Length: 349
Length: 283
Image (cartoon, rainbow over all chains, first blue to last red; front, side, top):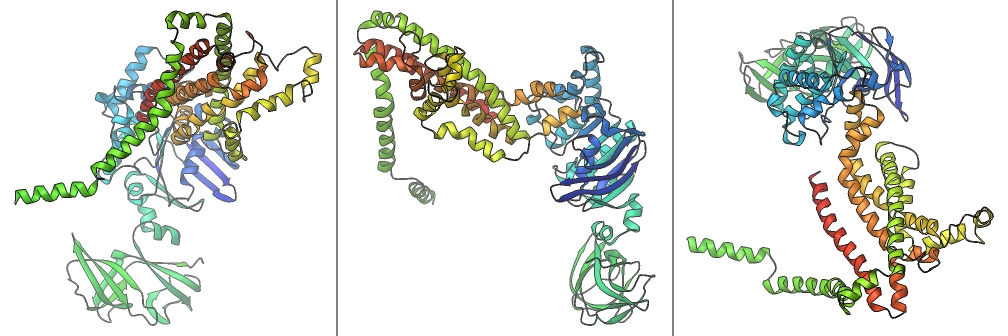
């Protein structure tokens, strides 16, 4: 099912949770809504589900107006961050709920309900838990049951609100891969909300980056990581070094000193230079656009992470870089730094 | 070495708790206090009720006046518990699941009967429904009897007992939030299905707890009912009112026999309350 969201506005009092959001989701996609808390991503998900209503704008499923239907009529599977399993029902009854509340005319008979629930519990590999109560399950098990329950109604769209937010790191990793493979198996259009960039980049086909009720960028994980459209996206996804620079006459100045890098057509004025930590090339003193003194080095795995005090004019900033371990750094070394890849965005404030 | 460890650990024990004498004194004070103020009166009620033998006890209870009082009390309790159950559920639902203006005001309003003296509560109904009251003349001209009749007693009891169910449910429902209901709705359940299959099972122990306390108070209410009842013998006397009347007429056995029924109600309430609290803690 394709989803189209047009110019959605949602206000809570004076606070605009969503401020004109447009989004198209293709059939069968696995999309991530990524953003910090308060960016409006959960509100957007709840509006698509019918659990919240927009103040203005349109939502359509395959061209058909979804706002004319209540949450129960949209055939949307919703998975809550804190599972929201029915605490007084067994796992089996939780999964069966959506089938049991169907209108009498379309409701399946008991035998086929049982068969369907069994099938879903097998799909999430938790058939052996069917007589337990939610309070007797681990977080990861609860989340998978919540997913099985949402799938029971054969949803046309699957919506997941921070599905792994309440789980510990290891379970989270496992469930991520599991969700990916589940999606390639059942291929239902899915949107999940997360504030964890790694999760979004690893699981989704496409990532929607949101901030302050607006969409900052939509793209594949590669696109949003390698070609961030805005300063916010560059700062939010991946670790970046940010330097306050000034652009004039097509030159980049840092604290009064002109840097030996191209301005790439950035407009004149106060700007921000973004460089990925691993995109800083290290050389001998005097070799790069920047120079600094190594303050601290921590080595782990294939990289060494160094804190470097820049000596660029009056701008005394400490930055952190990731360098390969082919050239071991020592505290006190004076080194040259050259940004291999960088982006310049106009300073917003 | 070992001995030294033992002695040091037992010394620490003594430091951690109060000296034995003080522990004993505190417990003794609590026990004596409870005996004098709770156990003794209960024993006296039953001792007086059976002071002329079991036969006299049952004769007193089968007196027509006593039977009428028991019947009236049960009826008033049934009416007020039933209505307050509905009211309490609705109020708790509104407060816990929705945000609206004046919510805090509504919560304080629910508590009002707890902070008003029962006698005042009764008087309010006299002022509203009495012959010189607000609606009194209109009711009289339509031949409707509220005051000094069952409706008045029921109204006063409902007023006095209405916080119980709502109070038991509001914190419970607030804690549970709305996520399970939202899940049910998104799975296609109707409003009624959601209420009966999800909300009600989640709060059933809280409902029973509120009903129990509401019932105990409804049956035991004296002040408010005394003001609106009119004390018509065999007609508008509830059990607590009859206890007082009989006592004032020096019919101690009859008086304490009925009092013993109320005392038993209290004991049963206490036991059931303990059981319910255990279920509530388990969630």
